[in-house]
Image 1 (cartoon, rainbow, N blue to C red):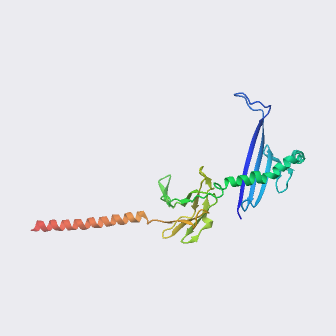
Image 2 (cartoon, one colour):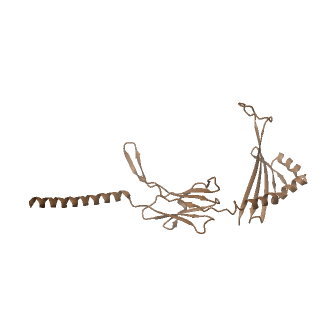
Length: 260
């Protein structure tokens, strides 16, 4: 079942005594009135609910709900306002009609670029930085600590996305930490998901992304490379052996030439 919610608001700030203060003067006080209008959709526009909330200094004092059909006071002052507006038939008819004139109308206008819009995510290469050795006072050096695996999911829309980590095909839900889904400012979103456990050699790690824009999950695989230190040692030993062989051959030719 598809659920879509829209909201609009109007903010009014009233400065005590009316006129704006002159440069360098302080305000004697500020009153803030907020009107918040919400549209709740179920199965497209099959079921629509319109809610308008009136808030004064961060406290809701009255609201209108199309499922109820009248204004309802949330504070003693709000009850007075509700009785006043409920006594005006034209005001009630206008609010009740907002389900069609405001909610359904805006749904049809915004559907192409909000509801139906899709942008596929991209997954960056999963490459944690090299293990860092920690140096303490007194020239004490601690062993290198493996860095966590990171999965960066970028440029997707809508915002709902599921990112999962696997180790040799086995999901690891209890070791995953994610940032909040953040907007990019261009109607797309991004999220960073980290696998907390340190990676091990010989194990394949997979970051899997599921999104409504994808027919199939998008996956990125990563394996820890061979130990570079061991590789360097082997290269050094091999170079030493080859150098020794060439030295022995050269020495042999030299002695043969000298004895002839």
